Image 1 (cartoon, chains in turn blue, green, red, brown):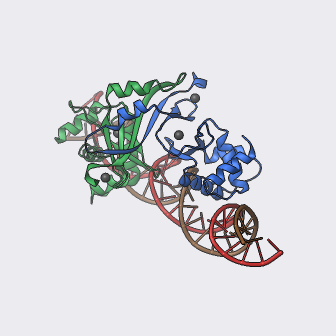
Image 2 (cartoon, each protein chain N blue to C red):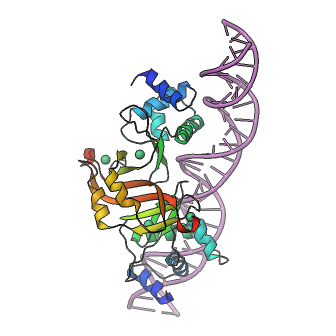
Image 3 (spheres, rainbow over the protein chains, first blue to last red):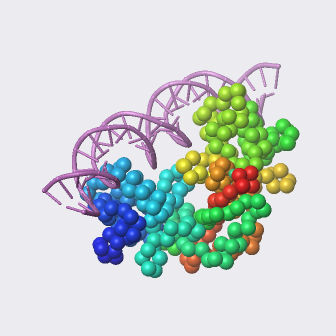
Length: 143
Length: 143
DNA sequence: CACTATTTGCAACTTAGTTGCAATGGAGAT
DNA sequence: ATCTCCATTGCAACTAAGTTGCAAATAGTG
Ligand SMILES: [Mn+2]
Ligand SMILES: [Mn+2]
Ligand SMILES: [Zn+2]
Ligand SMILES: [Zn+2]
């Protein structure tokens, strides 16, 4: 993905293009798993990013619907973007998270409409607006 | 539920019967929603329970499979028991959690085998062992 | 370039949950 | 009933992810 495409995504979401935002979005776009604050800091490497600024960047991205947060089993947050084929991030959260029991990586998957509708009518009186399927198991790399 | 039944459940799970464990289990058994550490402290009321002891009690219950933990959106834990008709708690975690956007209560539901198997084959190479369906919406009381 | 609203950096803070350790007490053995 | 031992409890100190306040820097607009 080109640098200009990263800037375009930021503009698309009405965010000012700053070095930190560009760097962070770049990291998220190129990861196939959800990343923690610490993961992102590590990936950025030497060019030290302020801890608070990174949290604020991630929260801004989340609020704008550019990325989404996933809670881990040990009360931390992981952050992930999901790009559609047209390079515009999806903002809905109707998809599955696979959590590997071995390496603890979290992967995002879209969920078929058929499966979704099967879940939507869980119980009378409860109005379902959004859903997340969390799967625990072993990822391909850990088998 | 009788006091002797509470003791029986503790014995069933190889746990010594102590006043705190009896009290906490009693609270959990009688709640239709998942409860936080603070909720449980409040429900117990005057008879002050030590904060650390309560955390340890809940973690022990969780490790033994007597209850399960559910992560909230604001990185806290809620705790819930699910009793089968025979009064023995289920230990599997293959069920749904409904999170009310309004009152933020979390409800537990069993999930039909049909829906479960539909989800199980999410993607080639990922071996699914356990699943949690998280639904967000409006509960009956908040509509 | 100059202006302004937004973003960044640093230090201090918050708070759910944990750890260490000494005192207490449940439950099986005698 | 009393003894004994190991699990459980209580208290204080600690941990660490994430937040808040505020002054300094900077993107974007003209
Ligand atoms: Mn996801
Ligand atoms: Mn549950
Ligand atoms: Zn793995
Ligand atoms: Zn509600």
